[in-house]
Amino acid sequence: MTTNTSPGITTRFLVFSDTHGLDSLPDSVSSEYADVAIHCGDLTTESKLDEYKASIRFLQAVNAPLKRSPELVDQVYGRYGEVRRILNEATGITVLDEGTYSFRLQNGASLTVYASPYTPSFGDWGFQYRPDHGFDIQNVDLVITHGPPKGIMDYTYSGERAGCPYLFEAIARARPRMHCFGHIHHGWGAKLVTWRRNVSQKPSHLTDIDNGSSVLIDKLATLTPKGLSTTSHCSGDPDPLIYGSHTLFVNAAIEGTADLPVQPLWLVDLELQPALT
Image 1 (cartoon, rainbow, N blue to C red):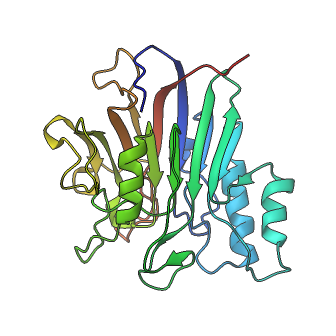
Image 2 (cartoon, rainbow, N blue to C red):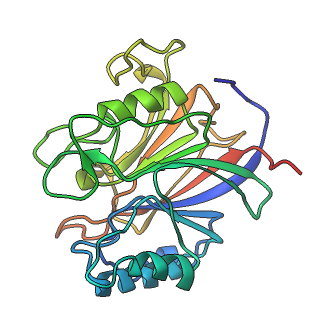
């Protein structure tokens, strides 16, 4: 891992997940511009075409030139592949299969992304695996998965950790600038993690995080109801992100409970390196 502390291009990310058929943005979000909009999966609840059409209306309302989602759609209540065609062709939204992708952003920055929809077997949901799954994450700025790594904002309502240990191992070795996900609604929040200097032979949240130097940004227990949560980790900010030493983890699940039906979306500012000319 090469640590780069030089200033880059400030890039704004709008991050959200688990919209489950929601068809409109909160008023406080609709006017916000972002360079990249990221949906971390669960566009729908039952994969019905009406839910997807509602989700498309939601995504079209987002004010961002680049919109990405890691959720592969291959079984719907319609013709095979119809939803993928609607998402990719009709709206310009790109669904990312598992793998690594590179983009040149309109602001001149370079963005390298690893995406995966796979989560450990837990309940009755799609894209689950057992007993393990390999995550080939190398030299990327951003990781988008549907579920969390084990030990990071992965507590369920019942108090059980539902994150993936194999995903944590891969993240701890790659140390991207940001890892965003959802799936575990109760785990909503963000944390700027400081890594220990040396990676363990088998990394875990118990051994590889310097908790004393990490910063909890927000979680449900301390949340003031609002439509948008913001955080910035650029040069000059109180907690600047140093690539290779820090990773910003964001659980962006926005489906909540009767008390707070829509949890806040995340607006995140990070610095990226300029794209090669």
